[in-house]
Image (tube, rainbow, N blue to C red; front, top):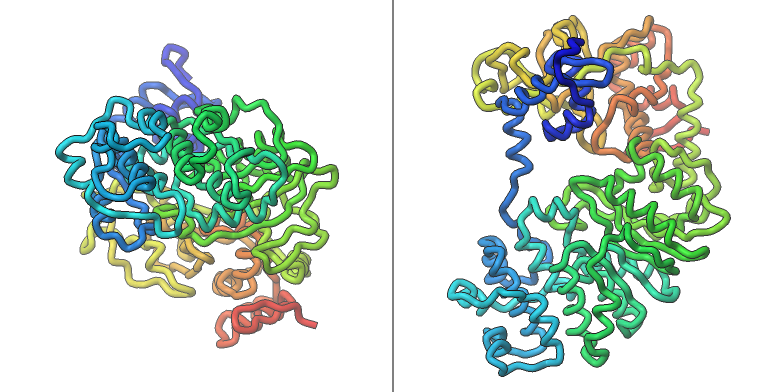
Length: 577
């Protein structure tokens, strides 16, 4: 490296370019950036930042529009229209105050009556705190004539607030509206052990559900870094329990970072911030474990990735060293409006005998004694299925792709405009073009040299006379063989096996088999199938003529299952006797 040049480390370069450190490392490897020994040339980073290659990344993060949580709205077209159109920042407190006042006094334009002194309900300070300097305008008066309520009987104020908060602000906070169904389930799983604390209370969904179960808001505590959400939580509790006054709310619900919390608790509940940055939920989980008393419980809604991805292995280790898992409820992907990341409601108890044994999963089965795999902790596996996975891992004469194959990513164009055509150029295989064993005739073509793209594999990978291409996003990966030397887009990855005596068509059949699909799904519970997961698959070796015979047969799936000692019946796997 030239000592006269200025260098920065990889993390600093990632911050400048607004990408991950892994992406920076990949660009160093490909020569997109210059440097070495963990350093990046500053001039290269600055030049790349201003190039067209990063424009699409910036556009994805610049989301200033609101996204209505219409999933929860109970049939009121006026409210849905309001949520779609959005409001200005100064208008939002006005609408929230109007909604709160309607909850205590029937009619419309309640805020006007309140401000003129014609509506007193005991919570005047709470309304003034929420409003600040905001006041009704002609614009807000046109829309406050609508009637609305939350569809699940839950937190209407939170519903409106989350719906009208710009997406970039919601993502920065990692905040999403939690419906009453999930909040009540968390309260049920938690059990009621003394004071209950929500460290990320938002507008109070979990506090409301807990108060409903207790019949009182006393003994409930919450913190949040969003001042508007804290004010809404206080209002929500006062509206439902006005007989307790307002004074206690300022002590029990505070604007504060959870990481400044020093008190210890018997019960902690909530939905820690996550979504765009699920690592924040891991920090919340480990801090909460430190604040739990012995025998105390926590019930958190978490991204499933916290249980499955490699980066969160330290969090899983700490969890299983300090707590016993009580229950795990895998929530559907529509658990949160606009969030397409599977989530899980996890309940744990801090105790001297931690582990998995006794964990109730989805109220359907209980986990027995098993050794947890900290690389990926999929709890949605029965003891019978766990035994089957163990048997498959012990397959005799198995070989593995790890260290025995070339893996490559597809091309990242850095914005498809101008470089992707639907009529001429070099054919591109996309993930959607792949079905088991087949590649649809490509309908996308690259019109420029690959070196103009943001990321690409070496030319010899694409031009290999025989390579396996696979769609790596979905319930299961899907594999086919390309013998035409075609390029692939980044939704389609590549494997070139280097195992002597292993037929490529047979390997493709093994990877497409129901047995391997079961193995991957139950081992890793993923939706994005990464290289290291495929490298874990045991591949049963057989004489080459038998491999080719199996690959060409109509009953290839059943025959591959037999090599694993597994029978496939209507998509369900059983151990052969």
